[in-house]
Length: 489
Ligand SMILES: C[S@@+](CC[C@H](N)C(=O)[O-])C[C@H]1O[C@@H](n2cnc3c(N)ncnc32)[C@H](O)[C@@H]1O
Image (cartoon, rainbow, N blue to C red; front, side):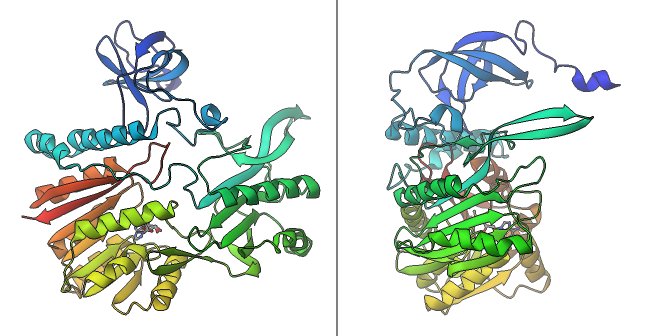
């Protein structure tokens, strides 16, 4: 019985997991890996870029393709450049810092085209036409230091375990702050530099590092669940200069007061609009029901997009590239091409940023969002921005929309804008959207694979794909944002 689980997957003759091969990388693929071929069979090589000749080790045979690990680069690519960051090869945050930016975005555009042509579940003739709808990618206004948010973990660089009297004892070694490398939730890679986040955030981080050394407060160990400091969240309103520091800690009530005294040393920083301590007693990195203690200012900071102001709470979704978000929202407005009579649904609306921007171009906007603090932020900002023609519903899009359909449909949406998380739309959400039969669907996506899957339903139900606008919000990574327009035929 147990051998079944451990048996290697069936591999074609000659190509086996564990074997090393030398291959040339042809192109980049969805998710960021390079693509090469061995005897005509596709092999994915994470960390490799086109033009490189690399030595790889086969890790898995998935039937139609092979997976591999990069062993070493044998020949550099002509277009390869020196990455800026010393952690590029270890940290896992950046995928393509060794490619010039103009090449990165050309590849991103190509990946969107190919993903649409391969993954949209419609007949082949239509599928092959879809790539032709992809527009020229809009680059990020900033290529480095574009992130307005930094999330780091307190932890240990190494964590050895020893058996003592039949018990497993974890030896905490080198408390530090940094990132978990992909697939490793135990130890933390300390980073001395990161070229993606805002430079002011970098200065704040230096302060936190000094604070760690001086106070020597115990760092949380995810194995034993002992220790206090768990994670750090830094946010900056790029257009307002307001800064947020949030320490996520595991501390009992009686430990909190002395802890607050320590954290208050950050209170005097200029621009600091929010200093918080957030309790997390759970197993996960993100507190499920965060208990927030605001030591300085408000439990939020302000950021501006265009002429609109938003209050950002620590765990509410807000686009991490502020200047890039303005490009994205302009692309959404162009795609929606609204008239003053339109009634617009902004589903998965977060703090209502898209809806509040579109409200000026239409009769009415309805936002739906499931995260409770995001919806509070949405209501607050819509009030402050004096937008009278917007309403918000708290709940899951699939439920709120289906309930509306059952109740006979209070709103007759002419345009539906959706901006779901990476998993895409719930089947019930797609069903309810079709029941509302809008003239136009504007699908904002951070994952073209799920977007292509979802668009299949709309294409089969009488919509045609007018355009797909890629927007780069995440230079040096493989993430790509897109705005697709589907029009009722
Ligand atoms: C990619 S974010 C987009 C937020 C917003 N449109 C923006 O541009 O800032 C997705 C949002 O969907 C919310 N969400 C996740 N699942 C949801 C669901 N089933 N129904 C409604 N909102 C959901 C998340 O809390 C998050 O705020």
